[in-house]
Length: 226
Image 1 (cartoon, one colour):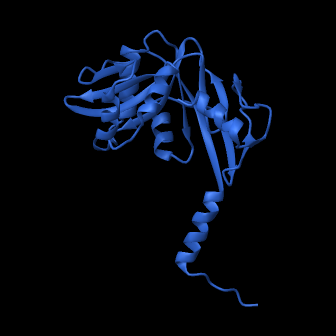
Image 2 (tube, helix red, strand yellow; image 1 turned 90 degrees about the horizontal axis):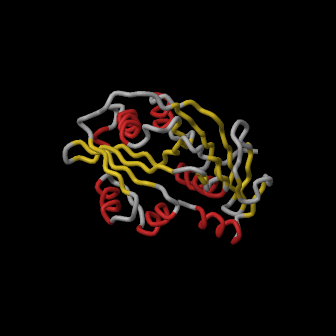
Image 3 (tube, helix red, strand yellow; image 1 turned 120 degrees about the vertical axis):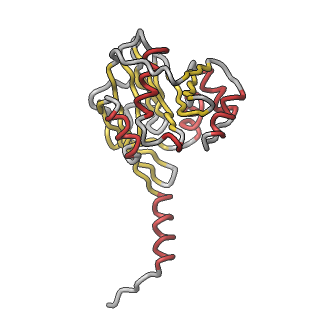
């Protein structure tokens, strides 16, 4: 029986269709011990602890988007927003999650944030400053001006984002745990790998491997999403 060779466009369409039905996410959880670092005096750090329209402008000026509702939700969960600048340029931006928890919505889990730590998330370096170890610069500035009394910085990133993984490791983070999540047709969430070395504080039906992505899950996720 002779196999029919599909045209390239048809194979590409089938591949995109398959990926829309089935996706695998690997999430790395990382930790860095805080130690004394040199000050980076040429950089300025602006801290936002409540909603300001300037945050949406900062996102847009660096090629990103975030809704007012999402920003307000993050402040409602006590996150803070940080803008790193050099002169008139926005060099990087990020959020810090305070104790006691970080909700990773991809898995429906809350992980503990120790009292002597913060959890950094959504780090973004402006395109014009990439390749200059700005990730490490941002951490140095945060440690000196915002996190001097803390002992640890936690973070998480998708394993497929190799540039982010590399930046974390170059900045002194080490991988503490790995989560693997399989999604089936946006209807089922399968926890393929449990956290092995860090505790789950709580979560949506945390003991279940398979979660139906229905209304209860969506409501739970929206309640804690930040």
